[in-house]
Image: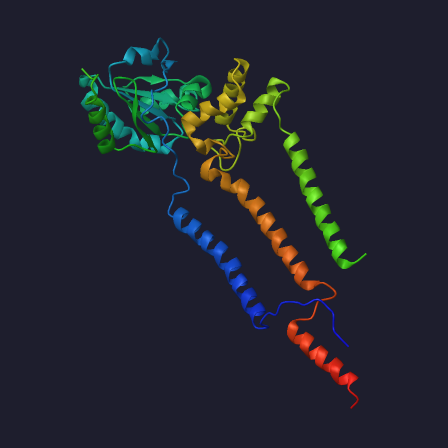
Amino acid sequence: MRLDAPERPETREADAPRRSRWRTVVLVSVPLAAFALLLATSLGRDPRALPSELVGEPAPVFALPNLEGGGTVDMADLRGRVVVVNFWASWCQECRDEHPALDAAWDRYRERGVVVVGVLFEDTVEDGLAFADELATDWPLVDDPGSRTAIAYGVFGVPETFVISPDGIVTAKRVGPVDYTWLTTEIEDALRTPEAA
Amino acid sequence: MSGRVRLWLLLGAAVAVVVLAVTLASGRGSDGGTLDDRVQDVASGLRCPVCQNLSVADSPSALAREMRSEIASRLDAGDTPEEVRGFFVERYGEWVLLAPTREGLNLLPWLVPVAGLLLGVGVWAMLVRRRWPPETEAPTSAERRRIQAELDALEEPG
């Protein structure tokens, strides 16, 4: 009697489990390695770090009413000068903390044409004026109805400070309270740009 | 119905459910409609800057309210939703978008689930095939020789 069934190629019995073990190792280790790589590259980043858009871009122009009433501060009039735009509020402790630094920078640079403009953020005019009186603020303060200027500057919260060069470009941005060293460094830098006369 | 056929039917049904869900989901949230709807549409894709994990549409904060009115006035002035989003991205960065733009490395969140699904189906199909091998298997040549030898032994009068 002849056997006439089709033939199946021979495999080594031991191959099958070894191959599946390798497959398991690859299936587990590749995603694990990818995940480890992701953690290694991302864990060092500060999740609360905010992007610095606008630096190097033209500063959004604004014309805002003086907090004390009467007149406006118009960015167009400040062309050719270094402008420090500071967003603040009376309810903000860090704005209180940074006040002496702003005050010192304002005193030191006002003769050289540098202007500090305080833009009130999410606050009432009365509370803002009371805060300014208490701290004897003497740089221009403006109200920002509807926060349109804050939105135009991409403000996340207060305090936030922008340094604008004489040609109207944002040269520096600080989220959180400024210190005197940062202000003087950035103002000096902005004063060195070509259009500063 | 054999177990295998049933499993393939099950797989087909699962794929149909996914396709249906994706189709239904993509049909929602298209623009058009009233100004309020369009504002809502843009605002729900923007992250509120003064909140933790809230969209501009959902946040009760004053800044979010003012951002909604900014969106409204821009849409009203004839800006497209894309241009309005661009306005906020220029100021707040990509950070402000609740869903990243679909380009470059940002595509990963969209591609990885699909790749995972395909991989899962592949592994599943592999397991099914291993668990339910073809019912009849041809003998290997070694088996063949043994069977032939045994047949021969049967035929020889012992």
